[in-house]
Image (cartoon, rainbow, N blue to C red; front, top):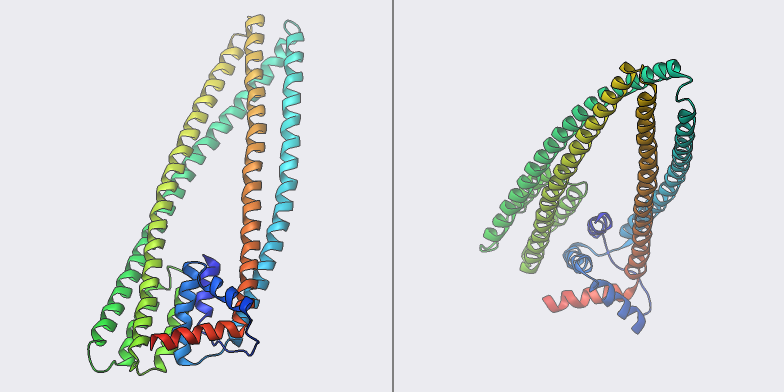
Length: 368
């Protein structure tokens, strides 16, 4: 989506370069133009822009710059991943060490059944303190989760309102252009007033729309709109922009639903954790108070050790699972960025050919 909007914005530039036409070049151009919504939108925008001027130098430089940005982004992602890999290995070693130590502790406690009762009591005091600290952290985590959910919802509400306003502003602009197209002339200043209003309403919803509208304003200033085909192409582009707003709004609602679900799962997890902490605290307290029953106390200790060992094993499993998921995310991101770089290279190859200019001119001539 980033590449799509960036290329669309850049297409407000000029297309013309001398090259020898070949069947292979023409085929590559048509395949690129017909490759999907981006190719179609790119070609439609190019027709609008061709009425205004017709050169491609600035676009090529913009695409090259964006390609360099993506290469930097790829290098940065790989660097970040190496750091994450180091962190994962450190945690994995730590958890494996905890699992090993937990098993050894169980064996030691069995040997201390009737010999070191008092030291065990002190150990239980430390366990109780730790559990109390963990319960406090659990409560803080709940409050933080609630605050985060409230912030996410507020951001969603703001985004939804801004996109809704952008859709309304787009509809108003389309309505004005359609009304003007029924008359004998169009007031360019009023069209630009509508476009400027649309730019203000949509500037917060995306990072790219403002640039698109600015390009439209520059084109419209050079037109008297006597050519009704230009009007139609302008309307088509605004309708495509409206569709993008609608998709973005739906994506925002989908993301809000997902955030709600994640929040519910997180709160359930914290509640379960709280119950585990409370149970462990209760068990340890009872064990300390019943120190006269050495065997019973030691059995309780063994039970606690078993739970701790299970907890360490769970942490180790969770760490490995999270690492696998993060690795997939990393691999997918690297693949996506590499795909974007490849797409930019393909776009540059096509846009720098005479075949693309000829194909565009042919479409414009047919539309007259």
